Amino acid sequence: MSAVVVVGAQWGDEGKGKVVDLYAPYAELVVRYAGGANAGHTLVVRGEKLILHLIPSGILHERTMCVVGQGTAIDPAVLLREIEALDERGVSTKGRLLVSQRAHVVLPHHKLIDELREKKSGGAIGTTKRGIGPCYEDKVARRGVRMGDLLDSERLEAKLSANLECWRPVAEDLGGTLPSAEEMAGEYGDLGEALGAYIGDAGAVVRASIRANHKILLEGAQGTMLDIDNGTYPFVTSSNAVAGGACAGAGIGPTHIRSAIGIAKAYTTRVGGGPFPTELEDDTGQQLRDAGAEYGSTTGRPRRCGWLDLVALRHAVAVNGLNELAITKLDVLTVLPELKVCVAYELDGERLDYPPYERIEDVTPIYETLDGWNEELHECRRRGDLPQAAQRYLDRIEAEVGCRVGVVSVGPDREDTADLVDPFG
Image 1 (spheres, helix red, strand yellow):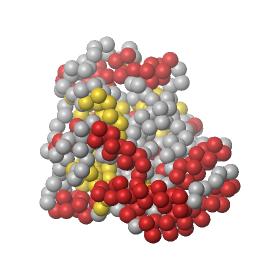
Image 2 (cartoon, one colour):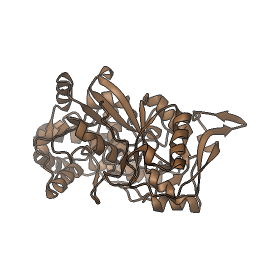
Image 3 (tube, one colour):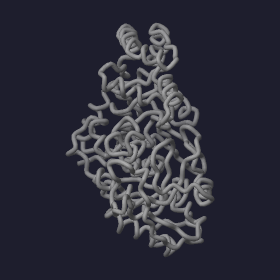
Image 4 (tube, one colour):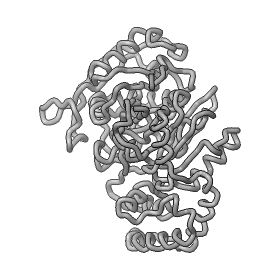
């Protein structure tokens, strides 16, 4: 078993990019297995920030190969811009980045439909309007365009024409106008030509790495509570963001996964619509937003902020089979003299230890109050270096969710990390 999954354990934006970047030097291969350009994985190295939407977060490590797997939804224009931006920074992707020929392509009308639906809907999901949902709809309906199709102009135009006809009634009903298949075929054929050297049989490469007993890091996108099957449906993403999705998204069997690591902030955030039991719509929530720079790396939208929800985190530990948690942004809580954690919900007089099937928007969080701390955490490199109150906070998380805390992030930079160890050790 040579693969380790890194998965979001909340509603996304947990800091997966930083953790994958920290673990990448221990791995020969990093595979992004789900989601699309709706994700924004932020890396900070020596004060310099880099935001990746599609390329795996291990790309800054020159000895690490990166793969974008078949479970992703790829906007080729975004991918090409990321490659060019990395080249400008002196980070070469040639020979180090492979994109699955089976990954589905986000097309212009996917983004159009996404935006028109959000405008028309009375109960908007709050999507990023990046076209991810409609792209996955095409995938499930067996009419999608895949990255390998960009390399064959005749097949590409035929698939685009058939795809557009399926969407035309929807677009007209929403008041939109679709582009022509010929126009799109020219644009996406050019993108295919520019990206051709990167497109190939990614699943075969991952499986060959497994046979060679290489260490493989599987990088998720979004978070458990946004998973299409395990999240707060319908306010979810369109893919399986949980650890189990790594197998289908990377093209490997479950027996090759040795462990799953869940990433969680020391508090909770959410972007877009949907229930959020511990949300703080007051000065404390704004303090967290300001101290944590909680604005979407993909959309720029302010994130909703709240206390740490251990009910949701307990659910994430269960459905992902987590072996370990990595806690990020512990330093942000330094601004608060007193902390609360949600240990259970109450609904109609009944205590709930896990999220209910329905009516999560009606639950009342049951809180425990813990002491805060005043000391800065940036120089802490071991859990034992943390203030006693911060250590007790982590202890409480472990006790409530039944999962040990490993890595602790105490600042945005790569170096601001406590208890970093080899995840394959």
